[in-house]
Every structure is written in C-alpha cells, then in structure tokens.
Image 1 (cartoon, one colour):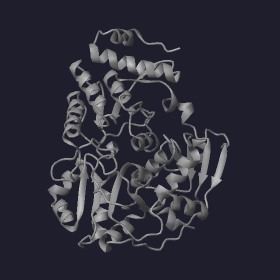
Image 2 (image 1 turned 60 degrees about the horizontal axis):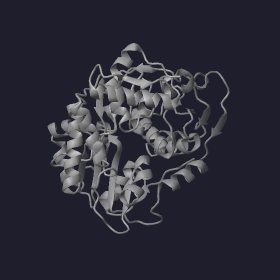
Image 3 (image 1 turned 180 degrees about the horizontal axis):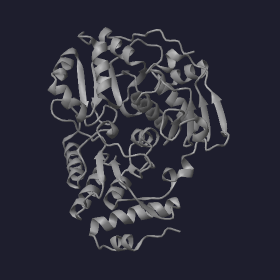
Image 4 (image 1 turned 90 degrees about the vertical axis):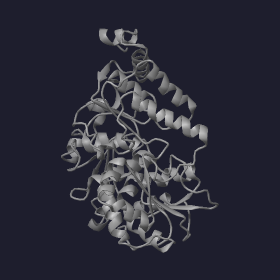
Length: 419
C-alpha cells in the first residue's frame, strides 16, 4: 500500500500548482502499479521524453509549461528530433519539424538543461554513488547504475519529467539495495588478453549479456585492467538493447563489485557461464544482418554519443585521408564545441565526416533513402535498432574497420582472433 507524506498529498491536491499536482499524481500512480510502498526524493533526472514521436508528446509538454511546471532537480535532456544548423540535415515534414521544435523548447522552458545527448555522464552529469535519481534512456540508465553506482530504474517517456518536476520517484526495483545483488556470473577470463583489450569485443559481450540476463543483474569476471569507461558504455548500451539490463557489475572495476563475491552478496550465483570463442562468434554473427556483401553505403558511429576520446581515435585512424562514403559521427554539443575551438571539426568534415549533434541517425530521418542499403557500425545499439528504424541492413565491425571501409568505399575486414 502506497503511503504519501503530508507534503506530497498537499502537492497532489494542487497546493503547488496544476502542473506539480499532475506530475506527482503520475509518479504516485506509477508507484502503486509497481507496488512501491512510498516515494523517495531524487537528486537528478535525465529526460528521454523530449524526442518527438507525435503531437501528443508536444501537447503534453506544453500543458505542463502552461501549468507552471519547473523541474525540482537537475534534469538533462536526451536526444531530440532536430540537429543544429551546419550539422547533418533532418528530413522532417514542416508540421512535424515545428512540433519537434516546440517540444524541445517546452522542455527547456521547464528548466531542463539543453544537453541533448544520450550520454549525459560524458557532459558532466554524474550523480554520486548511492544517490537515487530518475533517468530515462536505456544506455544512460545502465551506465548510471553500473559505472557510477547511482540508483535508478528505467523511467520511460513522461514519467521521467513527472519525477523531475515532483523531485520524487517510486521506491522499488534498482533503488533498493537487495535488488542490486547479482544473480548471474559471466566469466570471460578464458578469452585472450588481446581480445579483452579490444574495443570491438565490448558490444559483442553486451549482446551476450543482454540475451542471457534479460532483466537480471549479472557480474562479469575477467575484465580487470581491460575496461575503460567508453568500453563499459558500449557494453551497457548493447546489453540494454539486446535485453532489459539496467545494472551489471564488473568484478574489480565497477563501484559495487570490488570482487565477484561481493557483487553476488556472498551467495553462489544462480548460474555461472564461462564464455568461449564460439559464444562470441555466434553473437558477432547476429549483430550483422547484411549477409556476405562488401557493400557499405554509410558508416555510423556514436551510439551512445561519441566521447572526445573516441573522436580523437577516429581522427587518428582517418589520418588525413579522404573518405569515399559518408561517416556519420553522432555526438553531443559538449564534444563538438572543443572540436570547433581547436579547428578540428572543419578538417574532419573536409575529410568526409558528417557530424550528427543533438540527435542520431537511428531516431531521426537523416540517412538517405536507398534500396538495399547497408550501414556499417561499431555500435551494438545501432546494430540492434538500425534495420527496423532506418531500413538499412547492418554490418558490424570495429572502429578501425569502419574507418577503413569508409576510406575504401567498400567493406574492409581486419584479422582478429576471437579466442
């Protein structure tokens, strides 16, 4: 039975205004549906609901603004449906473009930060370990829980902004310590060190994790000394796309897992899986839907959005050469700004890089319409969503293979042992 405090009941009754009342009633109803006993205060929110999917979302946001809504906590914004001038053009009809613009402005009017990135943790939004937050966007949620050690469930569209306005979230799921204990153990220690240190490995591992764990919490053993933040980002994004993973632990790496035993709460795992090269090869094959073809019509990287370090590596791999097919670099304005200040954006664009900022090629109509088109990517998340969202078949590869293929104008493969 959900119990609200006297202050929460007063807000729900309209004491703080129409929009605040609507927001806390939405959060309270979600709590009742989830069986939460109470609402808890949150330190921040990340809002996924500002991406235009139809007029109703815009009208809902504007209704909140009309009711005087303001966020009660720090709230960053996930990708929108439009890109800034000078970046990749978005092909939206006039009415949809205007409604998308109105939606984005409405969220800013409520006090949300115009970050417009799916990787807010790269843009300075990094809640402290153990703090309760209400984040949307699957990769942001899993990174927040796993790498930062803050606590959030997956807050979907419109519940996310309701939590931000009310400063409250339902007390259930991954907010509760007992639900953060791992039940599964994945052991990758039998794989070669070279493979575990390669960036191409992590989306494949994430795909296996998502398909194996579903929504369960797992601890991964064998990545000590191998896993950078960007690699954990790629792992989590793939796991959240292939399954419903909201939290994973990496023994000796992530904050709640000094070792596997601690992550498991001192109990034996429900299941322990030692991954083999055959497991990886099977998962790798599933990431590519294009089949045996050398055709590549576009390359897209940056889902989640590219960090500055990933841009640095892309620039190093291009090495001043001219790309024969477009390489769409999806990133946030927090990364683009220093590239412009250093004069690097212009040089990369002259080489054939197309920057996609504030949005991405899978959620906005940016890629040209082509029959039988093939998109190459190093992102497990793009590999999962691109066929359905863009109509492009996918070829998955490493960042190096993506760049070399863009330079050559056809698929280029490099040798890598998956053992």
